[in-house]
Image (cartoon, rainbow, N blue to C red; front, side, top):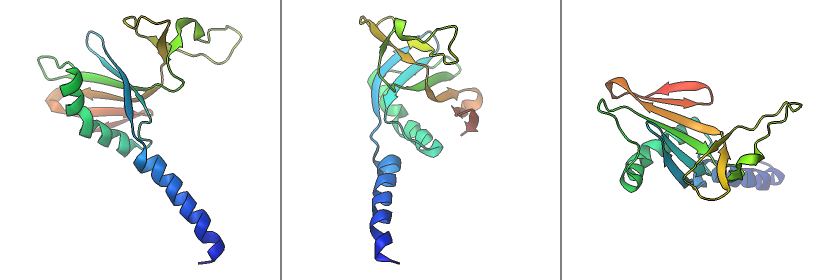
Amino acid sequence: MNKKHVIPIMILIIILRYFFVLRDPKIIYVHEDEDSTYIIVRNFPITQRGKIDWWEHHKDLIREKYQLPSVDSDGNYYVAILDVSDGFKKVTEANLYWFSFEHTELYCFNEIKSEDRCIEKNFIMQINNGMQNKTDYFIKGKYVTK
């Protein structure tokens, strides 16, 4: 291999390793509605496998720390994981202009007493544990059953 190519390849490997291996996901906020749990995160894994693996490795820790998700009498639960992206926003920051092709839909948490209590509805993954204890993952428009 030519020496000119070694350094760029090494840099590429380091960058890819950071994005696929060393990203340290952080839970920013956890919210529960009547039958749903919402987990707001930063630096979530990029790949489908990484997302599912993260949930499989952290669901017991989340249950222990937050006592969530709430499970019904049949063992069913629903969890939505959302990206915090640009952080929490004011309700008024939703883009609702009739002349715009862009629409920012916000999900707001009323128990947060700050004006900045909304995030963009940017679902990373949805998890549904349902019948026969099968877990369905909905990621980027595709269902994966485990």
